Image (cartoon, rainbow, N blue to C red; front, side, top):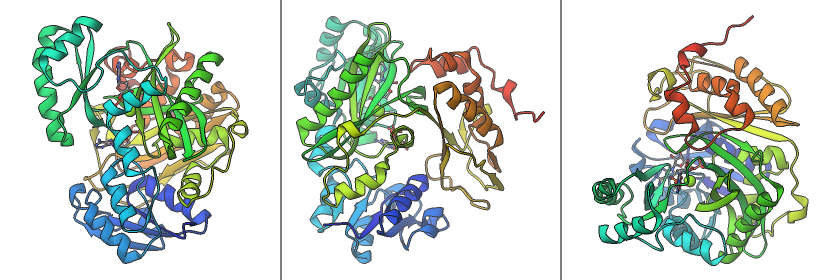
Length: 461
Ligand code: ADP
Ligand code: ADP
Ligand code: MG
C-alpha cells in the first residue's frame, strides 16, 4: 500500500525535514505538537496540526496514547517517528501497526532486538561483525564484573543495555572504581531507562567513531557508505562528515559489508545506522550499536550520494522495494555537518533558549541548512537545543572546509547564543584540518589548547 498520509510524531528540524520529503511524494502531512510548540515551523508547514498535550515530553511527544489518539483522529496511513522521542520504542511501533497503520521504520520486534545494546551485540557476533572485547551478555553482579576486568584489563566502560543519546556510559580505571561505579550505574540506568541492565566493554582509546548508513526492504539490503562522527562532547556528536577520511579502501569495504551482513541477519526494513569504533593504528574496527531510525547526521550521506533517505523511508514503508541497487550508490565529493545548538559555548555550553531576532542564511551552491528557525520564533526551554544543521559539500575535503568557513562567517542567528563560535574554531583547528581527531579530541581540546574567547564574532575585513 502506498502511503497517502503520514503523522509526524516529532518536532523541531526533523519534523520540517519529514514534511518536506512527504510533500515531495504527494503525501498529506499531519503534525502533532505540545502546547509549547503551537507556533513551531512544522505546524505551519503541515497540512494539519493536532495538539497532543502539555510541554513535558512524557505528557506529549513520549505519550504513546496521546500520539495514537491523534493518528486515529487524523485517520492517517502511516506514522513517522523521526529521531529521539518514540523512534526507538518497539511498543510504539507495535501500537501503530495494531491500529492498522504503517510505522515508518523496522518492526517492533527488530527495534527491541537491536535497541537493546546487549542483544544487538549478540546479533553482530552472529553476523560475523567484530565487537568490542567485553562481557558476553548482561553483567548481573559485581563478581561477574570483576571477572571481566581480570580478563580484559582497564580502562573499562560500563554501559546501560537500554542507554542512548550519550547517556548511561561510565569509564572506570581501577578495581576500586569499578566497585564504586557499578551499583551507581545500575541504579541510574534503572531510573533513566526503566532497565538497570548493564554490560561492559574495553575502552578503545584514541578511536574514531565511524558509522554505516544501512537500508533494507526486508529482502534486499544496501549501505550508503560511512560517516565520520568523532567530534563529540559528552558522547554526543557535534560535527559529522561523509565519507570518513583516511580510511584504507579495504577497511572501508569490510566495514560497509559487515553492516549489510548485520542488516541481512535480521531482515532489516527501513533506514538504520550501524556504529563502530575504528582504531587508525591497528586498522581494526569494532561494532558498538545500531540505531533503528533516521540519524541526525543523515544529510551528509545525502550530499555525497545524491539520494533522499527520508523519501526512501516513506517509499519502503509503503511496501515498495528499495529503489536502488548497491552498485548504483556511489560517492561524490565530501560533506560536513555542523550541529548548531542554542547553547553558550562561553558558559560551559549552558542551554540558552529564547527569541530569534534575526536570521540570515547565506545562499550558495552546495550549502544546506536544515532548521526550524524563523525570525520571531521563540525557542521553548523544554526540548533539546538543536537549532539547525549546516551542511556543506565540496569536491574535496579541503574545498568543503573552505566553503564551510565562509558560510559560517555569513550565517547570522541573533537573539540567543549558539555553538557557531565552536564550529568556526573547529574549522580552523589544524587537527581537524589534518584529520588527526578521535572521540576524546574535542573535550581535551576545549580544556587545553583552545580558548573560545579568542574566536568571538568574526571580524569583517
Ligand atoms: P544521532 O547519532 O542520530 O545523533 P543520538 O544518539 O545523538 O543519535 O540521538 C539522536 C537524538 O535522540 C538526540 O536528540 C538524543 O538526545 C536523542 N536520544 C537518543 N536516544 C535517547 C534516549 N535513550 N533517551 C533520550 N534521548 C535520546
Ligand atoms: P549511545 O547509545 O549513547 O550513542 P554508544 O554506544 O553509541 O552510545 O557510544 C557513544 C560514544 O561513546 C561513542 O561514539 C564513543 O565516543 C564512546 N564510546 C562508546 N563505547 C566506547 C568504547 N568501548 N571505548 C571508547 N569509547 C566508547
Ligand atoms: Mg551511538
